[in-house]
Length: 579
Ligand code: GTP
Ligand code: SPV
Ligand code: MN
Image (spheres, rainbow, N blue to C red):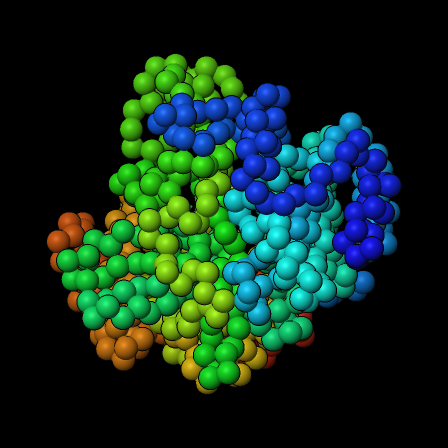
């Protein structure tokens, strides 16, 4: 008996499913799952002529986003989880959840999903096995990961896998927990069928557990998209960018360049997670551990993200979007009129002007291979060499359009101090500014003070450090309108970043770091409001002084564990600001 078989058997004795199904990842298996979910109403078919292979799933209205307050890191010592995580002692977590898993799969099938995170045959890839009683989760895992033989072959070579146990339980928020045991590389999740709570390969394994493994093993697991930027010479330069949830990763990863006539183009390598390693030449390399996109639907349109629109025309599972009278998916910001007879995300007839037809965190699950701009290197076992790291978030005030750190250490400070307005991707208030270091606040599986130290240490080990940048597409004017057009025009900012990587690109050294001169960003053909570029490239001293107070509050939670380099950078910024 293999370790996997032993664990499956032991789990089945607790959860007591009626049947056990070992997944092979085949098309037949997927089609069978879809048929049974169509039969019991878990899935609803869209018009199969217009949207072949596309289905709608409506999750429980109490279960529509990640639940950070119910997500725990269970390390033996509380301080190892850090102030950035909810903590429970491993024994207590096992005890409490053990009771909830008791008989939780009765009357259901337990699916065993062996899956590979990362390209086949890559030394960087890792195997997970998820046990779940949700066929919806199985179908999503089929799209988001590499399921079946490819995983078992990798397991045969390494003998290692990350176990993840998931049950819908009774889908009650009172009995919902997402528990991580970093010492054992184990995940237990119960009571939610949604996204990052239930597709255990994604945030639970590829970020929370992987970040903890990465620290021990000397690599990085980050909430980052990966792109290749092609210039007129045909050379492709790769960049990785961290933005908080629902803040523009998928959009940047699929950007359609408005500078295509100058030869600039973006290739998609990944849209949410990057695993990064230092190669034998001292360069940072990244692979996308995922095989699909679990993207935000609202705001996705032929104008904002035509590549996503093309990607999700077939073989896509939609979750919590609306359905038009003629059987097509629809959401706010799709850029087309839905016509009469719309059914909202909860299955009720919808009247325009009332509540939203699609949930703000409604999503599509689509295979990466269907993306028209997918990079020829997206499954390269060696990954791609990263030349620039970009941190971005929603900030309607204060933060400039783009600036560059003066050093790796300063860049780590920039990422570690990033403020961000919250979004609908997690339950709770939307639009509240919080510190979200490296866009990893909900995903760092250990004490963030140690995480900052790890970033500093990684930089020291690299012979060729990527340059580090901060961007903000979300500055607003006094009337609440975006100052920067965003989307395809973000290529103009990427162009400056590329120029900086190439040792060109005009900049001035400011208190924040290198800011582009007002003429350094190519704005030709843009109709920007008067003075917009000045505002977007200026330093709001008063705003930043307030910001440093917020940073101080955040950092102080970590006490002596905070690296002294971060403290020094923070003090340096305050001094330069005259605070
Ligand atoms: P997760 O999948 O939750 O990690 O999110 P993500 O970072 O991939 O976010 P995504 O690209 O899906 O963007 C979320 C929302 O931000 C969408 O509603 C977009 O329309 C909006 N958005 C993305 N890029 C821009 C931009 O450049 N400008 C503006 N104004 N909005 C943007
Ligand atoms: C995010 O919230 O950052 C996501 C979606 O990418 S989920 O998989 O639900 O975490
Ligand atoms: Mn994400």
